[in-house]
Amino acid sequence: MNRKTKNSALKAWSFLTAASLLSAPLACSAQNSTKAAPQMQKTASAQTASKSSSPTDKSQPQQVQPTQTSPAQVDLVALAGPTQITHTGNAWRSNMSTVSIKSGQEILPLTMTLNNGNEGKLKLKGIRIFINGRKILTEADFKGKDSVSLNMSDILAAGDTQMEVQTFGNTGSTLTWVVTTPKIKVSDIKPDTASPGDKVVINGKNLPKAIAAYQLQIGSKTATINSVTDKQINFTVPQGVEGGKQTVTLTIAGVKCDALTLKIKAPAELSGTNMVECPPSTPLIIYGKGFAKSASDNAVTFNGVAASVTRVTDTTLEVVVPSLDFPQAGVEIKLKTNGMDAKNSIKIDLSMRTIPKGESLSPGGTVFQQ
Image (tube, rainbow, N blue to C red):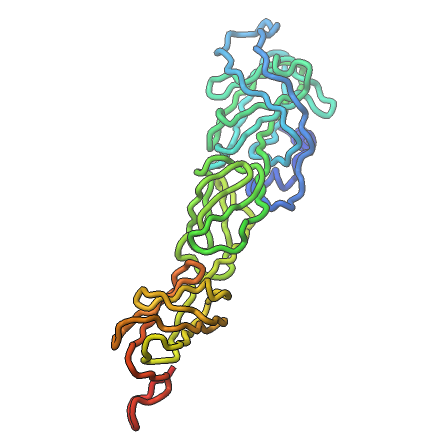
């Protein structure tokens, strides 16, 4: 194929952006990406192939009727092609083309669009296309139209697929083919703040419906995908993910999407109390970080017995020690913030004495520091 012929093929498919033709990763983009394609020409339903009037016509395997599509206006990305085939001679000619689909892309909706003649070039009189011995198209499918779109989702596999294109017509007659898929878009994530174990949704467009097509990570942790539709990905925030703003890395059919972010609610952390020992029913200050702003969202227990939380700040919880048997050493204080266990627990002794931290037990004795 000479340089002039290649340029003609590219011009024939100007509805695809140059970036789309060069890079498959553009198949997954942010919602605000530039549209790549105007409305494609609608095609009629498949017709039964008729015998060619050419005297060189030979018997062929029975045609497997492909599904012809009439796509609405969508953004498309080219996965293979465009490739132009130019006929030479006055007899039937066999032309071999290679349709290359990357691993993982075979589960995407695949459409092959074929154009008989373009930019004023001659049209072929005879067209037969075979893949793995299956006849998928003949000139009868072009009756009354210049372009045909075929559903190739159940025909093309990952890797290289050899396609035989048999052509008949005048020298210079052309046929151009390209394999496309709707451009995958991810728009947002709801809610944008969540805790480990929460259910979260990624919204998008043209999403594959097979869960196997997806890989999803929140920070460094792999998330479990629960279900998918063509517009939503439903997943669970993994346990162990660190708190704060985390990157959501989504890969679809081997294509990495534009990154999203999710704010993870970090578990609270306890650092100590203002008392070393105290009796039940005593007001106690618990120090730490990551507390819920509402007192009712902080559940504090002493050896499993709930304590009353009376006040909360960013770094303190004021509680009333519950009624427990005493004296008792090593009473464990636990906290759940918004239903999430704190990162750690602390201990306190219950006794008749009230010993604030920083005060000594006796003159010259041990001093307890916070």
